[in-house]
Image 1 (tube, rainbow, N blue to C red):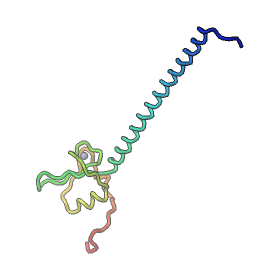
Image 2: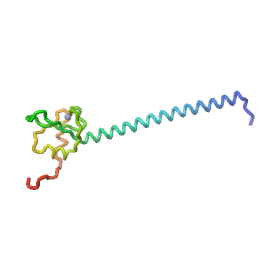
Image 3: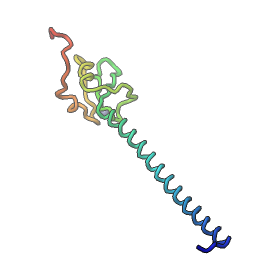
Image 4: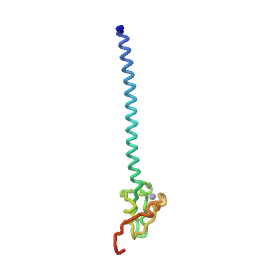
Length: 121
Ligand SMILES: [Zn+2]
C-alpha cells in the first residue's frame, strides 16, 4: 500500500466529513418526522377520546331545553365536561333535552343502558 500524499489525505478526510454531515442531516430529518408522528398520534388519541363522549349545554332560560352535543362538536360553547353516554342519560333523566342539529348526538345515545337509580321506579 503506497503512502498517500498530504493533499490526498486531506481530500479523503473532507469526503468522510461531507458524508458524515449528509448522514447527520438524514438522521435529524428522521427524528423530526418521528417526533411529528408522535405528536399526531397523541392528538389523535385526544380527539378520539373526545369523540366517544358528549357534552351538555345548559339552557340560558328555564323554558329552554338542555342541548346535548357529541364531544367533538364545535357548536358546543366552552365545553369542559366530557361525559359518556350512560352518564348523559342519567344526568338528563326527567329534564327537557334536545340534540344539537349540527352534530346529531341522539343516535349515539339511543339504546344506552343505564342502571336503575330508584328500585321503586
Ligand atoms: Zn353539537
